Structure formats: structure tokens, C-alpha cells
Length: 239
Ligand SMILES: Nc1ncnc2c1ncn2[C@@H]1O[C@H](COP(=O)(O)OP(=O)(O)O)[C@@H](O)[C@H]1O
Ligand SMILES: [Mg+2]
Image 1 (spheres, rainbow, N blue to C red):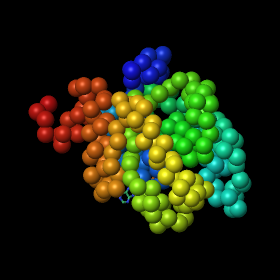
Image 2: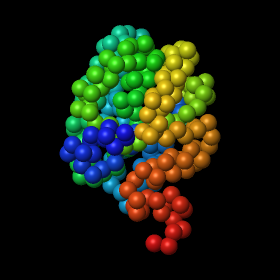
Image 3: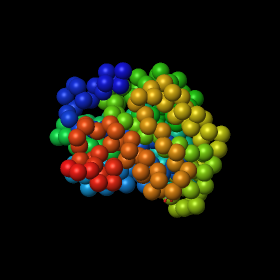
Image 4: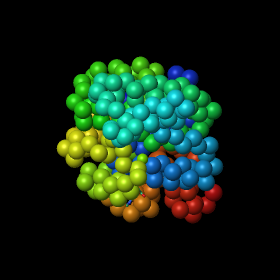
């Protein structure tokens, strides 16, 4: 099933590996994306670390629009508009950044992707999931991650982390706890529907412990014999 979904690896997007970090606010996606990118680079892999929304010049401008606090620089956005703006940023990102990197064999480490739209605009905002999937397919041309890692923790824990750094609180952080609970429930449903496509890592632990589990999940999916597995085991293998 999972290999059938990996159109990106079989339709010309190349020999790379597409890793996506997902999860609620404050779960540690940005922290863990950096950590796993460092780990993979140390293991000799070519790595492109990127994020959504963003990753391109237009995408970063769309990100500013989407995440600015309402009443500050931001304006109220209808859920449908929001879904399309995220998809627009994604269309740019997939074609200008992700596919070219995969084509030359890089590991793309991406902080959020399609499943964020399904969880936030679907689960959180209540938009129809099948309609959203169609929008995603148009935006991505069918590109699917090789592995998504769900960083899983109670929403209150993640929001508390984000609110502890008030300068970075954005429009989404400021949505109510009930919204974020629906988002997390949607993530769990996405995992249940495609368990092979995901690794779930408990994120309510020290960052180093979370990072070790993320590394192990990635090392189990990258091609056998890769240097990454040696590093995952502490570098104590013979070769
Ligand atoms: N495992 C962890 N334990 C405690 N705090 C963490 C952990 N991981 C990240 N943080 C802190 O929580 C905040 C949010 O982390 P971040 O990586 O930005 O999360 P996300 O990108 O998922 O919103 C940051 O201040 C970060 O330093
Ligand atoms: Mg982040």
C-alpha cells in the first residue's frame, strides 16, 4: 500500500527520501526537523530542510499572510480561502524545492505538509476531507511523503510551550483549545487510516529522547545499508 502511494519515487521525482514532521502546535516539529536534518547530514546524506507554509519566496509571503495575528498585520480568513492559500504555497514548494531535491537524491526534511491541511482545515475547521484531498492532489501532483512522523502530545502541553514564547504566537496558536483538540484527533485518524505511512513519537519528553525515536523511525525506512543506520545505533557497528 505504502509503496503504491509513493508516486513521487516512481514517477520521476527521483531517488531521494521525503520525510515530514507533523503534529500540533508546540509539539517540537521545528526543533526535531533541525535535529534530524543535522543527524542525516552527519551520516553523509544530502539534506534539504524546509517547511510549510513557506520554503519559497512566494510561499514565505503566503505564510506571513496566513500566520499573522488577526488585528495586527493579519486579516480574518475564511476556511476555504485558508485551504487554498496553503495549497498555493504547497504547489510552489513541491515543484520548486521538494521534487528537485528528491530528483538529485536528497533527503527532504519538511516541517508540515499535506496532513497539516487535512488536520487543521479538515479536522479543525470542519471542511470536507475528500474535497480537501482533491485540492492537495492538485497542489502536489500526487507527491506523498515516504514517512511522516507525528509528534504526539496533549494539546495543552504544546500550547503552553508556544505561549511561553509570546513573540512567536501566531493566528493558529491563538485559536481555542477545542480547535486544537479537533486537530489532534484528526491526526490520530490519519495515522489509523495509514499506519504504514506514519511513525508516532511521544513528544511530551525531553527533546533528546524525542530525537532518538525520530532517528530510529527514519533509520528503519531509509535504504538498508545506509550510513544513517550506523549512526542510529550509536556509531558502534563494525563498518
Ligand atoms: N521536547 C521538548 N520539551 C520541552 N520543550 C520543547 C521540546 N521540544 C521543543 N520545545 C520548545 O517548545 C517550543 C515549541 O517548539 P517547536 O519546535 O517550535 O514546536 P512546533 O514547531 O511543533 O510548534 C520551543 O520553545 C521549543 O524550544
Ligand atoms: Mg514550528
